[in-house]
Image 1 (cartoon, rainbow, N blue to C red):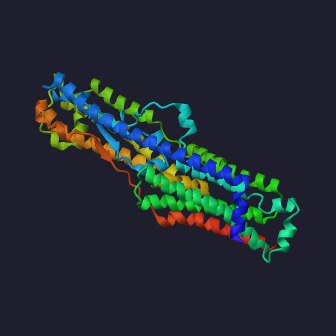
Image 2: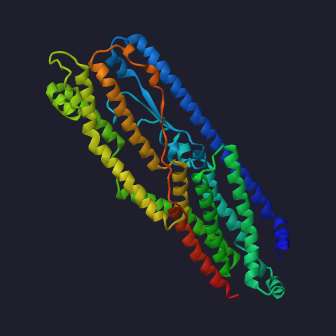
Amino acid sequence: MYSLLFKSFFRTKIFMVSLVLLVTVGLISILIGKQYLIKQENTIVAAQKFQQESIEKNRAYHNEDLGLLLYYLRFTLAKKPANINALSIGQSDVNPLLQAVTIRGLEGQKYDADFENPSLLMSGNLDLGFVIIYLFPLVLIAMTFNLYSEEKEWGIWRILASQTSGKAAFLFKKLLVRVLFVFAILVLLLFLSSVILQIPMNANYWGIFLQSLLYLLFWSTLCFWMVSLLKSSSFNALALVSIWVVLTILLPAIVNNYVLNAYQVPEALDAMVEQRDGYHEKWDLEKSATMDGFLEAYPQFAKYPVPEDEFSWLWYYGMQHMGDLEANETSTEMTEKIMLRNTVSETVALFVPTMHAQLSFNHLAGTDMISHLGFLKHLTEFHEKLRLDFYPKIFKNQPAESVDWKNYNIKFHEANRSFSWLKLILPTFLITLVIGVLGGLNLKKL
């Protein structure tokens, strides 16, 4: 029976169209991921070269004044490249790969990013995750919506039914042939991506692999349920495409609009302005207004004198730090609101397989907003360490030669991509199970 069904399916036009479409677009998405990784590598190499050249050039002009030299020098923290990023680029196309900061106030530098083409950001990246979430379900719909109705409308269902003892089993086998074909293409593309993108087959890779299979199983079961209703071809096609639109476009848009309005995040510009105002207003105040707050945070620097009648780097960098403290409340509020948005989105996604798959892909690949917040937290720690390394040398008026500049190469942040297998698998599995049971009960009516 299965051999006949496979031969019959392979002779259809939808087989060849689906094969060419899925393989071609899948390979293109993998190559786009490859280009993304190459761009990351080139950017990091360029940043490393620029940092070294910048240190050498500025030392030639400000070698005797370390405070002035460090006013200009930038030190780079980059996200450690992970090839699995290419499977689901996520929000990494809008969040910077690296940040180059001076030891001055951080809040004015934290949200600097490269300019990007808005039209490209609007359309997004054609990564493999996008192909799996949006294209594969459409192919499944195109291949399965008329499994029963086509036979009935052509008047051959009675003949087929008379030649088989189990009509429901025959429909199920016919569906299974098409589903196995799509799953075979998916597995092929996932293994090709591992080879072409050189992705290690670690837990995160297998997490994406399993989530992809579960996601397609959900759509296969949904198509099975629709066929089990024994409706017309036009009804099945319209209903399945409508469900696809709701699950992939409408519901995510509604949830996104809700979280944007329910948890309004202060603009990053607000923190930058507060930092600048907090710093600039200190020029017009007594030096004690700066030093009291700064020395309260860093009492170890109280031993260095601050002249009242002349400029002092201790006073200047103290002002910069006090500017950061002025913006700290807004910056913290912004982070908390972003975390709340993510929590709400993840909670809703437990009941929406398309959203759950997308958020899971991004998290497993380390390209979600939580990963970026982790990077910003590391950036704050990186900036703090730089300041505490350089402050004693600046306040002692040491020359630039006192610093071992070879130790100040580009530093890397590695995203935390840990996850729970239960949270990854259970939501989609339970929804699929319920739909499958309903479809099976419907087929008993045959």
